[in-house]
Length: 376
Image 1 (cartoon, rainbow, N blue to C red):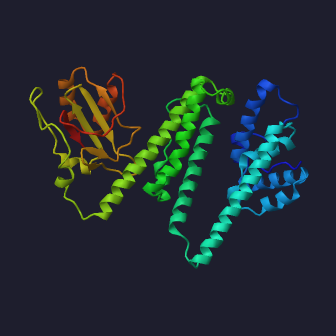
Image 2 (image 1 turned 90 degrees about the horizontal axis):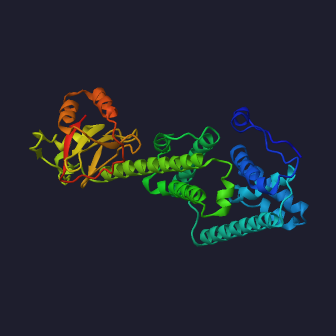
Image 3 (image 1 turned 90 degrees about the vertical axis):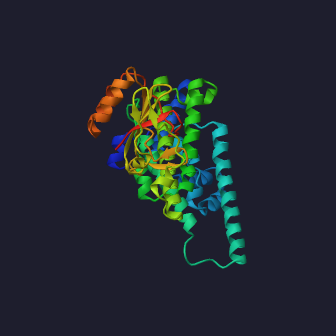
């Protein structure tokens, strides 16, 4: 068995390759395998997995299948099957169903690759191939690459302390790759599934998942769920901002007054002798304070790093950072609102942070009970 060449940084992050020098006990087997899956997923690639599976097919008297499998595109390689093969090489005795899984995964990959090649041949017969690459395929590939970047953040998170409150910053590298708004769902769907899987593990509705994640404490699993939620929120914020910008580019310039014309809000609040700030100021602001006269909540919005300033669409504001924005109940609203209106931008943030009431999420929607206190 040839050792795997692992870079220094990967070795620091994940340690040495897990070896099965002795067979794990039945109750520990799943946990040890999960750790191995995680290690190979971080340190190895599809090309290595492909070679391992091809050799395994030869060793198990499937030479013809091995040749067909080596001819497929690397992207079709079932990596989980490749990691299983490598575990067997390092000493793990595979179950019959696991061996069957390796074979059927390789068979499925060959069939999928064959169908794809056949379709490409049919398309090429019907229509000459263009010399230039398909821009749609290029942009989708960029989305997959950005998804890989996020996977790297996830691996760093779960290989660390898995603390609560971790907030991944992913909007900037989505912007760097110019991921289109319609392709965000390619990345988002994966994290929705990951979050659901963890939720089922915590709830105990799936015995296999509960066993698979049993190497983490319940608190860590809940922190991982929240981390998935933070990733999804970042993707939503980027999608929201990108969509808003695309909309502005496609249309003729719209005056600020027209952009905010449908934004519902309260002009005056006689009880505290408050008048709203001119709504058009929102479009040039990166921070916004809005008071709900009905439930005494002060909403605080912060523009996200990608959008820089807020946008308005209908009765909602767009382009705010879902992690930094929140709302809190005011115990003495009249005094506090007067104080925050007089304060500068940094001091306003400090004042909001001093509120001890519970912080909850905001949704960006405006109504006739909201009065705009400050837009800076």
